[in-house]
Image 1 (cartoon, one colour):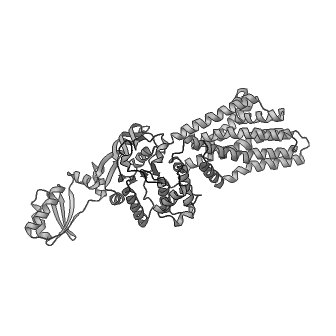
Image 2 (image 1 turned 90 degrees about the horizontal axis):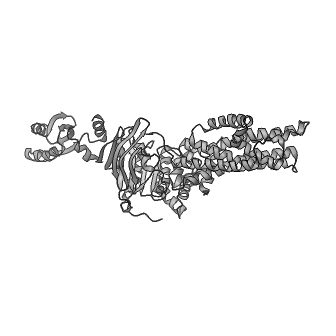
Image 3 (image 1 turned 90 degrees about the vertical axis):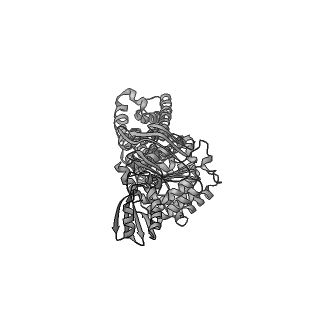
Length: 239
Length: 315
């Protein structure tokens, strides 16, 4: 179901764009601020608060948004996706391969930095670092399924995605209890909390629920994305 | 890779078949009730900008769903049928290619996406076909418009498809590149491929294809052999330029003929208007013999597609 040619092409295309420099900015900020806080903060209680909140509601979703919307969305925008779709490759294979690249790059640019930042703050023996890394990994997967879908649905995927992150993930998921059930950030925090057992992570969803819901959201998003791509239409009469 | 059998041998008969196909966007009708059959050889899809040519190509390639009607390529529906691309090559009009790849990498990647048994061989042959071997190690980003077009054609031909669709393939090409592309398409048609290309430039279609489908305002305005279509339009006078050993004598002899509606002496020769193409061309030979005049040149003065077009648009 994975296509090595599409994976290689997507990887080169995504990393080759100038946008790729953007991927690293949130990660660099996260690590720099963690290093600074480790050096100056008097209390040791900031890591779960900062890495949980800033990491899971800013760094990770933003990185996933930029990467997830570009792996397929950039090709749809500039029209080069036609060269990919004018081949007998199944649309599910296209979507899955693109999604895997997005998830792997998000893990590299957000989940691993999250782990490194926690290592800097708490040292290698801490369960917080492992928990945050596992949580970030899970959230990377769900967020990217959502953002790859978004890029097939709308040409304004980044704007729509930002709105979703600000309103749904940032505001409602923290204020309205039930919304956490449909929040990729909450799934990640729940996984992190199951390892780190730290109330400062503010995980509102149980692990079982988070895992089941995460899988469902991912599968539904990728299925919808495949269906949408199978009905890909070239817009208008170019002549 | 062995060449596929003649496209006529494909199950389902004719290569491309549209039956009463329409496509609309909301209230706007882009393509209206088109029925056409396209077989082996080069066929030109001709029409002014915005006539619906690209829409028709997108419909055929399965990049648009017909709002109404039936459309098959090699006997298969093209909408939501990616498997069809094993037998179909599509060269889109938009210039967007993975420009970070070299030409060779692009064609090889396409060959691998087609899961061809001999990727390297197929890619090499396709690149040779479009004469891009020398430039194939350069990044596509450095290519001229014409080179991009050629490498796109190589990618579309790499899997040896029975049907090749090209949307405005000559856009942005210089005259030499155009000629080369025309030769290439001719040669590929000679191998039994079905080649359908769109163009709004009359002389391209005139040079490349005997068969045309004229699209005006989303409708099929005319279809078939270009000159035959022209001849069918008997209501419109045809203009011939005639040069002979004695233009004045020939002119006065022609004036009385029923097929001739007007004669004018010009510095380039006689300009003769006729409402009956067939009768005039038969009569003039007999007439010159009878009058003892030597016919030096008989040229249809308005046989260009431009005039066909203007006529079709007016009617």
